[in-house]
Image (tube, rainbow, N blue to C red):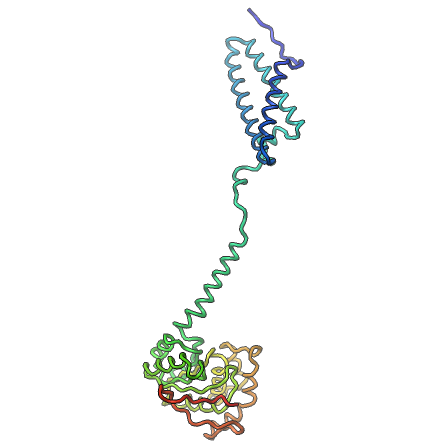
Length: 333
């Protein structure tokens, strides 16, 4: 018995309209149950994908039924097309668009990879930079100087060396490496302090003769202290000799400029450049240049004649520091 089926355009039947309405209600319920636009769009996308899968399955079944019963298969396919058409019209009227539900474009709903991407943390590089800076500072200020001598440089190879204040480990390293016989300390630590006593104890244990000639940290003080230091530095019996202060830049820098000028004929201006290259800053401490401008000629005269600087307080002859002896002080201006 043959059945005639009309596939041409016609008004959807009540059954098709009911199915489309149920589909729209189910989809709206699924979408409205989500609070955010992203979640509602995601739910609608999965719903539409499910509907498409169901449509494909039913269409496949209809294709297989076409062989045995062409009429029923074509009728079922027509009903599916009608239901899907109503659903697309309803999505367009809602402002969604079937493509925006995840079918052909990813613009409306971000992918899972995008959604799960962690927010950028710009403070992490800054935190690492601070940590590295702190580590470098700790090494330079706390570790390096405890092992290596502070601002250690050679003035005359095998004879005269310069540095900043020395820890016990650094003093031991310098004395043993360069066979230091004499140390001239311009007051790296306060008199009678534990640190100064430790310096003397280390010098005694290493068999090194230590002198202390006190000057102020900005290189000012009694100019006769520089005269005494130059006499010690130019006496071969004291070589190899190490001269040092606290930072190794001001008092030590000044006596090296004077030594270069008196013994090597280096102009004070050229010697001052060497002091600047070893850590001195004229902007930070302008007094060093004032000392050189004021006292270079009187110091030269006193060193050559064996007397004292005119107009400055005379100082007793320096004696090696011992644990039981007093320290030679020359802080008077």
